[in-house]
Length: 83
Image (cartoon, rainbow, N blue to C red):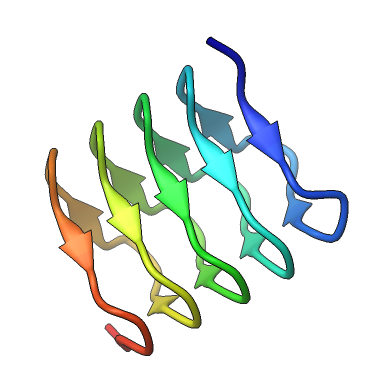
């Protein structure tokens, strides 16, 4: 199972993406962030520095996750959520 990153997404150095994770268009993931296996990051989402995201997490479109947030396994985050 491979990682899929849309060509318009920005994934900075030091980001770790788990197996089967999908990153959609317009996403920006900042350095030192870790995403687990089988995650989905919806379009135009911004994930700041040092964020930890568990396995099988679905992040819908236009979500803002600020620095140092931890999201546990199996969580779904609704579109437009701001942390």
